[in-house]
Image (cartoon, rainbow, N blue to C red; front, side):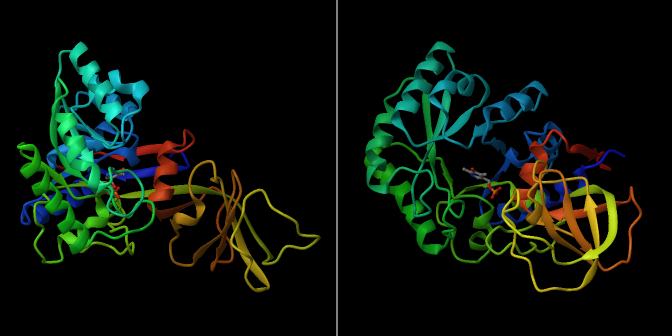
Length: 356
Ligand SMILES: *Cc1c(COP(=O)(O)O)cnc(C)c1O
């Protein structure tokens, strides 16, 4: 088989999605399955839909277009604020977008009029993580203005936490989102149908037992694909953490000193500082590097340790004296490693057929 290679197990992805959908349904929350880490894979989107997600979300209109071309028929949400320059494409191929700028929504309205379509808008609110979002005190005013725009359907509000600053979703900020939904209804006389509470980082809160208030949607990517919650990166009960793995091939296996020699200056990539001298070690090189993945987000099998990486070489220490040249080592990966591997043209993507 070709290496390096992402091994994508659709059955495990289906299982993860199904478990999350079932558990959240019990809390009155529907799931938007987020495909952005998969380059908008139509096979993965189809597995998520079979598992019961109510819609598909992606951050790139290009990925949404890929899924449309592959005849994925469901409501599609663009989860990054649309670029003004892409408004026409956004209206043509997505049904809903998450928004924070009135000028963008005006442009979407124009594009929707030209296309004689209705485009759904969810307004994102800033609740402390300092990525996207309208400041809460400006929300009512922007909802009022959005409601007046032709061919725009105001669907609801949402927030996104834990992505930039690591601010965790909790009872306090989620209660604030619920309160804002009610405030909007009281002031604008329009139902807030969707209250989209956040991403995989919301699961601890959602399963925590406290009331979920008005939150009725979560946008989940990482937890479905990797089976982990992103706050502590702990495995989620009953989910597979190896639905996607990365295999790479051994191109050198030698016993070498653990410390470099000569005059040491900067290397091509910033690396973890070298640890203490361990004497001679069994060192492996795999044909994969910074161009293909995030080397330090890889979880190697027992007995193997990631030491460093350059553009094309991954350096490992092994507890085993030597490895066969041409052998493969398979890793679990974190989100950063996954996203980079998915977007590298050098990494083959092999999707195992669903067993049903
Ligand atoms: C990426 C993203 C998600 C999904 O996040 P995960 O941590 O992968 O579940 C949800 N909402 C927005 C706005 C995003 O950008």
